[in-house]
Length: 105
Length: 164
Image (tube, rainbow over all chains, first blue to last red; front, top):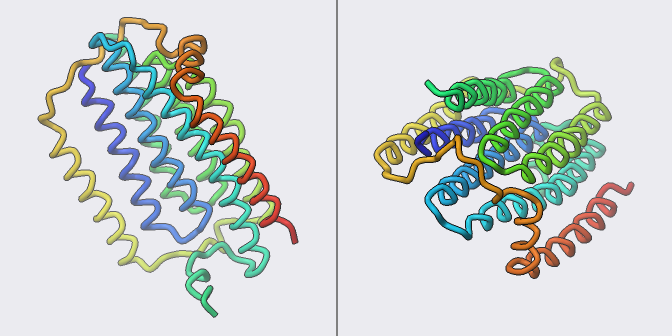
């Protein structure tokens, strides 16, 4: 199976994530779309890892460990980001990101 | 068409349809549920690619922890489709067009790339915990310890921000 299949799947998921970030105004949905983009990249890294294993490389486990670290960072990011969104909701009773443009006042 | 290709096509269509459901559904709770379906489909891809450890970590961390956290926050805020903020229409079209343009450019650039093929039938033990653990604790000890510091600071940050 050509690795292009996985590349195109990852590109499709990544672009759907970008469209979601550009099209929605709900801060939580935007955050979820960022997670979707991270997952598209993870999938591509795992596919490349499998590709190099099948090509005979022995150090392809590094790609899977990189995915592991991306998951670690994503988990930390989500905990802080959701805390920020909850705080914003508590202050403004809305998760509309347009409210954030008034932060400077 | 081999069985691997059939599984690939089924999983990919589920993943892409669920991802479209995330960005198109009006109700945020439906978006989170679509996201969970998408993540489960991606976990199926991990199994297909001999990444057993990542499969289980993805299921536990993403589907089990992160998405449930999103769901909790949504339920706590009591958001629904009626108070969902809407962008102006031309902004939505502009976002969709620019995302689609990026899709076209990337697909066009990578269509002719010559890369080794994936042998989906061959199994390898690269993704097993013993193999990954050896690599993690020999070559990547410093990033591992740094990630523990990152988690500690994220925990402290979340508590400080979340406090009233």
